[in-house]
Amino acid sequence: MSESALTPEPSELGQLRRERLLTARLYVCTDLQRFILRPDAGPVDELDLEALRQFYVDAFTGGVDIIQVRDKNVSVQTEIAALALLKQVADEHGGLSAANDRADLALITGVDVFHVGQEDLSTDQARAILGDDVVIGRSCRTFEQVRAAVEDIGIDYYCTGPVWETPTKPGRAAVGTELPARASVLETAKPFFAIGGINAENLREVTEAGAERVVVVRAVTEAADTVAAAQALREQLPG
Image (cartoon, rainbow, N blue to C red):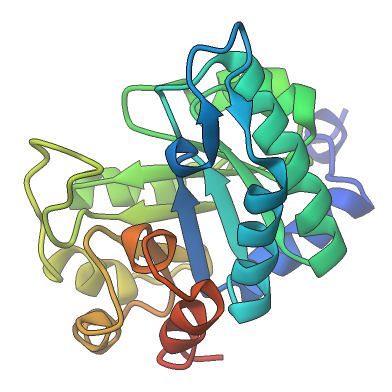
């Protein structure tokens, strides 16, 4: 039996997701706190689904390619509701939807992307749950971790950071622009995103270091105008 027979190929859906990943440049992570109307309102926090939908729509309209829901302070059912809505809006706009850490929630909601850290599920464990069609990414904060991600055939992309210290990762030391710079010269077609404290004012430092893709949080989620904030970032990125 050939090796290709032992390794299932992604379906058309998996191929489409990976094609979109290759053209993706701007990735936004968002929590759900500002969309909660009544905390502790039973097993599901009462979400302002219209406001959340509008945020998703505005982000994609402004040029965001991937949106990830990442909030460890909400109930499972609340996160499922937010991810299900994100998947719907992403499909409508040709974007990618992403879940963080929880493979079970990624499976239930059918999102396109699953992202994990170094201390989370292994690639094989994630693939055992999600199959071959889901895009998988991993966070890297050292060059050794970057090389491991590049060599891992089950990883589709990786992130390097935090470039600068950020309140979303308290206590995590910044790695500066050196790590994305080293990643940019590796001989690999695997895409990577720089992450950590990036905004419209310092983005040029990141792109000059060699990163063509970035993940942002506050630069979009805390902006008064989501569309304009996304556009200001996207205009500085190649492609």
